[in-house]
Amino acid sequence: MKHIQKAKEFVKKELYGETTGHDYWHSLLVWRNAKNIGKTENADMLVVELAALLHDIGDWKISGGESTGAEKNRKFLEEIKIDEKRIQHILDIIEGLAFKGSIDKPLLSIEGQIVQDADRLEALGAIGIARAFASGQKFRQEIYNPDIKPAPHRNPEDYKKQYTGERKNTSINHFYEKLLFIKDLMNTEAAKKIAEERHLYMKQFLTRFYEEWEGKK
Ligand code: ADP
Ligand code: NI
Image 1 (cartoon, rainbow, N blue to C red):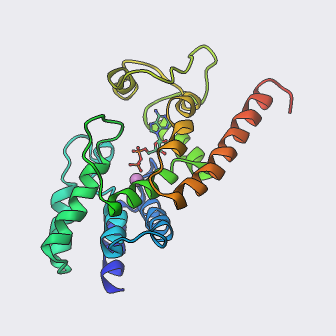
Image 2: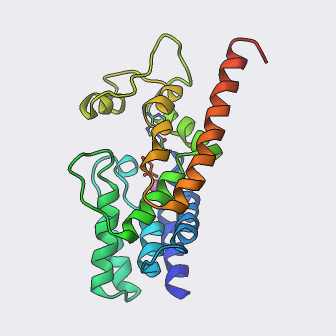
């Protein structure tokens, strides 16, 4: 479909070569996940596919504060002549996804829930592991430090301190503070299944990591 092809080109232009896990390939994988999950849901797949492809344009972690993502996305969607109702829906989904972990986050439509699941799957499994360490580098975190204990149920304000440098964290801790909880956040049945399997793989990775750390393997 030509809209999707154009969206891929737009995302490639914007995100190709980004190095913290929000690159062009991540957008493509979220898109593929979303198409897959969406098969068994009754959803407007044009909205799902476009929102998946565009979801990380102008992410605050990339642009460093000033989010121009919504403006860029609107301009693009108008150019390819998507109708206004869908444009608004797509922008709402992407904005809703940005309220990560926030209690008063907006409710997502079924289309939004599919994209959220598709994006969350990327934080799990082998790809999730790779992204955790890539992101860790961005936050100047160590891989692992047994002196720094994970704090799984810290409040959101405290949690954010790792991103401002007020609290040193490690990438291994991120598994216990976030990644191992993600499987229980999935909206759709299709995503739950994939998440369970990816979750197990991460647990195996952690077991193996400590075995190597302790000289057992
Ligand atoms: P997305 O916008 O694609 O959902 P996020 O910006 O939430 O992704 O996070 C990108 C990746 O960075 C995720 O896979 C997440 O696990 C990882 N990440 C976020 N915070 C940390 C952290 N403190 N340590 C290690 N990895 C992190
Ligand atoms: Ni993403």
